[in-house]
Image 1 (tube, rainbow, N blue to C red):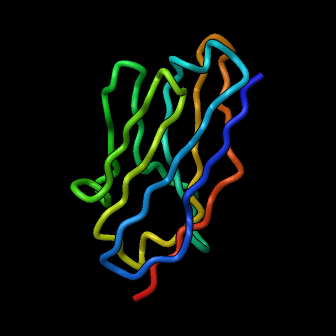
Image 2 (image 1 turned 30 degrees about the vertical axis):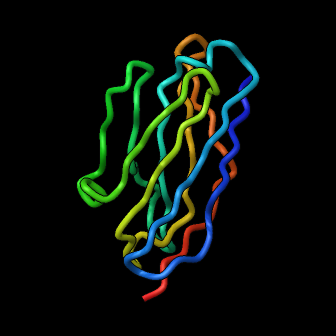
Length: 118
C-alpha cells in the first residue's frame, strides 16, 4: 500500500546542521497524507518533532521550534526536515510517518539515526 523511506541521518557536531528526507510511495492517496517526523532517543518514548499537512500547515515540538524546519513537495511526495543548531539532546532515531485518511492508517519508515556530538 504505502511505503515510507528515510534518508540523511548521520553524525554531526553540536551546532551543526543536517537534513533528513523522506520519500513516500505506493498509493496515490499518500500524496495528500499528513506527514511528519518523530524521534526516539535512547531510553525514551517516541515523540513528535514536526508535522505538516497537505496544505502546508506546520506544527513543531517546543524543543525544536526555531531550529528545525519541515517542508514537503507534493509533486515528489516527499517530506524533509532541515535541522540546525543541533544539540546533543537531539540524538535519536528519527522516523517519518505518513497518515493516509483513506486507509485510516499510519505508515512508518524504518528510521534513520542522528547523533550529535558535544
